[in-house]
Length: 560
Image (cartoon, rainbow, N blue to C red):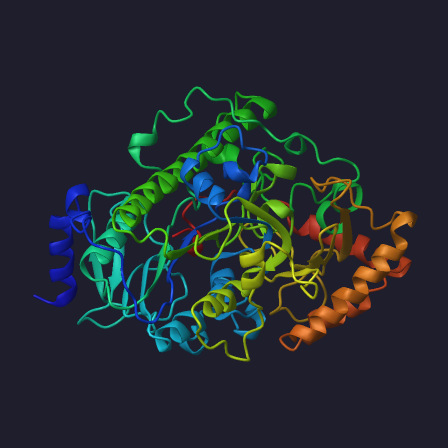
């Protein structure tokens, strides 16, 4: 019997609550190195709106009491952002400490070469025992982990398969755990590793990654009654995209692109919307169908979130019983956020805050004060150098992120800290009808440019290029595009300068596509001639979308 199959048979015998806790009488580790253990927890598509501690739109529902308590004991980062709100590129930035264009992981069809697996490789070199359990989604084998047990691709919610380091070569090293939801199985696997495979004489670096709450939001049956009688608040912007919202890029001329840009909760986008999935009843009015779809969609999503939080309760209880909770850096984040009906958008991909912002909570009592919040601008490329800094490991010069250890330890933003986060979404109109765009976000403003084409395209834009500017101080919900407001003319000029400088600094200057870069440069000044061309593109694109057939769940390879 090969090692992998032997492992799973042993695991199925051990995975009961008492078996996983059999080491509960162990004393605290006495690591000679003094390096902290690191537990890196990542969920998939978990927006900060759905974490009570963030006190945002869904705080009253609050499916995350365990995470709330973790935040009370450590630091909560208010302005943590991903640089590309889609799974593979975002995870690549976390692991590598680099923007996705530098690692060639711009979209879901790309993969992260092992040469960029910086975080586990550097920690392993610094003496850490390394493990990753759960979602990986970077295609190549996680070779720099002493142990891995990862979902193949997107993975399954029920009866999940895992690829396990052992005698069978990647990618055929599969085992299956039957009768379990993935969140439960992933937690069981982590508890087993901690109890039975962890080397107590070495610090550990453990990446514990949930599939939940990724679409299609399949929750464990025990949550069927959770929120059954709760009315989930619906964002006002779901019912109407206010006249000031968006641009030619997202609305088109006289709103002719509203049915075609951004998949929806309501029937606005006839190709892909949640009424198809959750309220497919032609007898219902548009409003009634949308209300039913929204309530079903949100409850399913929040039930998945609740499953994650409950499982974290199990994991943290184990750490506390084994005197590991206080001497382990616990970092909780998500690969990106999620649009939950705001602007009548679903999924992620957008540069709007609900999608671009990631939750980030860091707990480490020996060095990080309790109950501290910071509004410093943090990018996901900063996570790797920060953890390497805490571990006294080498930070390679190629890493583009910067350690914010000083911020964690003092709660004070360094005087020379960055003042903007960079964003670029590359997968033009793929899957959820989101145009390619780039921009910067500061503490007060967000400037976005939709350039209207995929980075692999050659020729002219397919959707209209346009700029959008939001004043997050007066308009935190991003309801009004003020790019044409004369009062913001100087702001636009300054932010365009900063965006150009940022692009040059990080090397995102169009080497992958001369055609895309030509469009960016042509429309940079946003002249009347540029607007006239955008209006023509809007009409042509609207005409090209006529008769598009309805989306069928599971038909796209990235659904699987």
